[in-house]
Length: 179
Image (cartoon, rainbow, N blue to C red):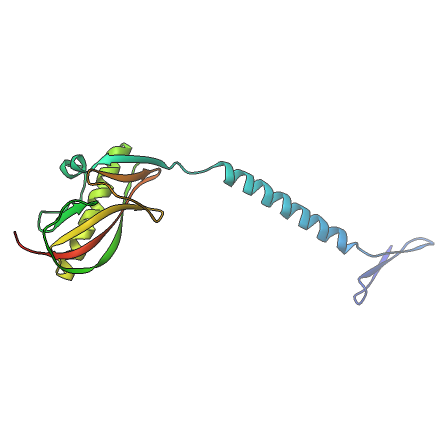
């Protein structure tokens, strides 16, 4: 048996014992099979991803307990004063702008509340560093700011825990009058 190939038309000719058979590979069928397989694979992947959503537990925790906790590596000292929600503040000499900080701590080695307290303290430590760099001695109107939604409270902060604990805070850096 001999095989002849015409490269211009992708027609193959098979010379058999008394007959000549011509066939052309069906490229459309191969393309359709590939598209079908990709579509099914994508659908299965999306079905798995959509059902496997990450944990996102919301906590409202007391600020006082978080400030007294000892779990955090990065804890603010008392060089910058913090005022939460609409707490009364001393007279503001200069407002240096609004900043947002995202405290994030892994929850794998601790419970959610301890991780949330540590994330809150990490965000406050970031406030303190930025305030000192800007020449501020206070941060006022501190609010929780998860997914751009404010939650203002003088006694509680909002934290979301899953694989990590997130405490996102927004506040105004200010120079306040000495008391």
